[in-house]
Image 1 (cartoon, helix red, strand yellow):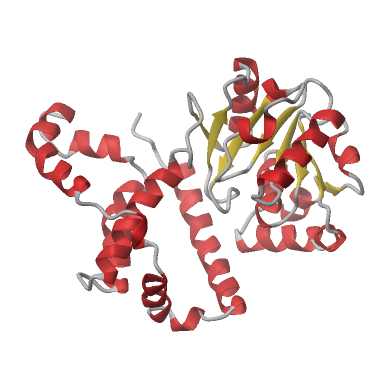
Image 2 (tube, rainbow, N blue to C red; image 1 turned 30 degrees about the horizontal axis):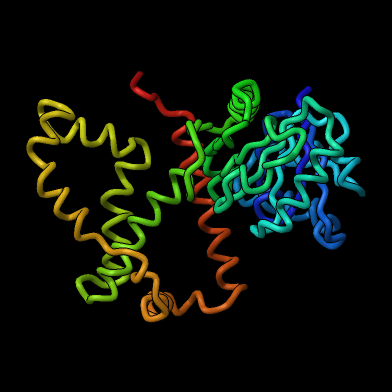
Length: 307
């Protein structure tokens, strides 16, 4: 049986625990905060209930809290680290992981902002380190970006890809390090332009969200933008570039930049969601979101792909 160590059992770590346990893998979870570990069983059970997962009790039973990091790492095939996004803490933690884990254990970070060389350079086991960047929450959104450092071995990447695929995720391999990986670079570009359009009064917050939710989002739920452009012109990709390349290129050149992420834009967005003004209300809406994501995940996993 594949054994997984979860290091950092907060929001993302718990979700990863569900991913691996749901796939029948043995999971040991550790966190530096005793209160986080104490709440682990209840939090995982709640996540499974919110997602409408069958056999929730059996799945939750595969996740064992570990009293020490070393105990969690014992026999692990892969470590999924989900600690704070601070480079000093990440370096210290990966040094500890590299010293404590068996030589064949893969060390993967859930980092969404730090490329792997920043915390693995100089480690004896740097070749077994990578970033496995999920989308929140990974137990409901299956893509995971696998980003190597310049010294990550191809064997590590192959083994990691196989484990994530066996866990029901959709691993996407990057060929090299790049800030933000792929998903966040795409998200940043779309979000910057969305904030600018709202800030300039071109469209309301509600109208912007409706455009994505009932427009782009409908297609992108089951088809990526590359296949979309192939189908949006009778002659395929080359025909699309001929027809739409110049105007789309002009729009891209005019797109918003970092200045779109302003306090004024945040105030406009917050004002559009008065019912989400405090953490309990946000948490309740997150539970609703996760239920919707679970239903969509079930549909997309069971529908015909057309292949």
